[in-house]
Length: 399
Image (cartoon, rainbow, N blue to C red; front, side, top):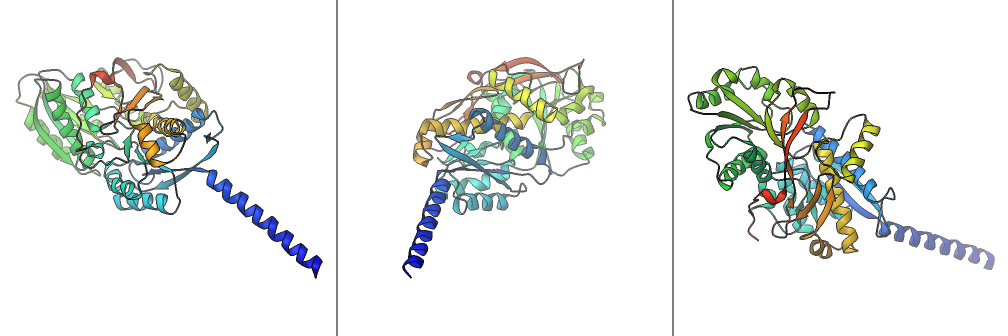
């Protein structure tokens, strides 16, 4: 009996030691939730974000996937660009998965639904790549930081690229992204003291495939106006520019001004050589060591250059690693204190989280579609980099 008792006791001791060790190992994990709209029309955006985020963690940790001696564990969740699913996914990440910090999501509508969840659980949410101004504006709370550019940054960069005397009509999607984009653009024109006039706003459902009717209303609003006539398009997902071009806006002297988009979309713009716009990122524009690595590594692994949202995912990873390293902890209050005013390197260069609303201040780029393209991804010429200091970004929150 004594030998049996000893054996049982020994086994129990070993079991308890193993359980303790396993518990400590799990406690040492640094958990990050990445929420993205991987199902639906923005699937390409979500996949790019995830790719960029993982490449960023790899680069910034020198392949160790460790920060402050703790192993990083990324938990990816698909919200299908549905606000209720996004809200539930974040609550599950904070409540059940016990993540330390979260990143997401793809759609502005879904991101807006997530903001109160971060406040409820008192955990940091880094918004990437959703852009609606309301995220760091009237719907903001202190747990929200954003590496993605917002609608106002898009608009101010676009306003800088437009002729000063233009008549402008908008075509935008009828949800937070599109309506915030138009609102921000109008404010941007006032901020840069442009004499350009907005003469029409056209909002279409996200799933629109036939643009004949909205385009005709835009043509009617612009065609008799004196001076330059510009159709500005604010659109996420499959882009309508080619379909509108088939309706021949040039017969009325109307020019199109698209915002920059993902490479597969801009690849279809070869017939619009000389058209100018503004873009958040194009792989050939930034000149820095981090972007050089991203371009070379992405080309090697995926046989293509990194895209718009790949850079965004990488920037979010940089914000996460920089914050955790500088704070020396995953404690929320320490993270917030560290991240307010924090500089961090990205493939676009330095970004800074503005203390007042936690929006990342960053450069934008004015581009011109190339007339001669050396290969399938040689699409844009750089007109100029627009530094963050030249983008008078308004503060919209009520902090």
